[in-house]
Amino acid sequence: MENGHLKVEVTPEDKGKRLDKFLVEKFSAQFSRSSLQKLVSGGNVILNGERVKSHHKINSGDIIEVTVPERQETGLKPEDLPLDIVYEDDDVIVIDKPAGMVVHPAPGNYSGTLVNALLAHYGNLSKVGGDLKPGIVHRIDKGTSGLLIVAKTDMAHRNLAKQFKDKSIRRLYIALVEGVIELDNGIIDLPIGRSRRDRKKMAVDFVQSKNAVTRYHVIERFKDSTLVEASLGTGRTHQIRVHMEYLGHPLIGDDKYGRKNEFSRPALHAKVIGFVHPVTNKYMEFVSELPEDMKKLINRKRL
Image (cartoon, rainbow, N blue to C red; front, top):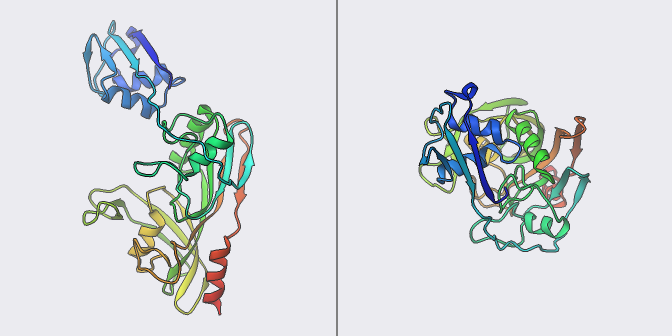
């Protein structure tokens, strides 16, 4: 998002449109939809000299002014941390993230993240996600290992974000859960929202929630646990962890949704990611081997 001031007059053919829809049509090359929404809610979009809401209907002859505030310094520092780069070209990067690494900075945690490492390796990344998330199209939890996509350009970011929204990106996870699952295959179609008991957690909730769909397939059963492959139909926060806990089979090592045990993290690995390349339009798919800690855990269960 560049600093500056934009001004446009509404033409007769745009009369009656919602302000937010008009802005997206006019300025989609410069700004993402979420960036424009933030500009409106932040009072940086003025219609005929007055602040209005995003759903306001515009009229022919209206003058709309958009002021882009100066970018604030985030204080993010490049850090020469190791990165396992599975694939890279001029538009996208596929990273195999180790367990224990946070994807992007947040209040109180501005170092040691994947973003800090990316800044040291790459001069330019997509800015669509904001100052604290350069290049970050999606995320996986700190305790989860495996594959995720990073966008180098704004165009690639928007294209990939649309694929996530359209649910066309293929994501397969391997998880080791407590207890023996009876059915070989299952679909968990249960909405997820912020837990009403603990705001730091997510939970299955049938009121304040969003739809969430997880499909699972049993790979192997052990005496007191089950190895499963899970695919995401949606991308809710902690989705697999919440859904499996609701079924009574929390992930081994997940002390947030299960209990502390012999594993130091949720036993979850993002094994496969597949997407259509934003420039070549070719389907690409990448596979990550299970990390050593999960291999050892599975072998212990097997014995």
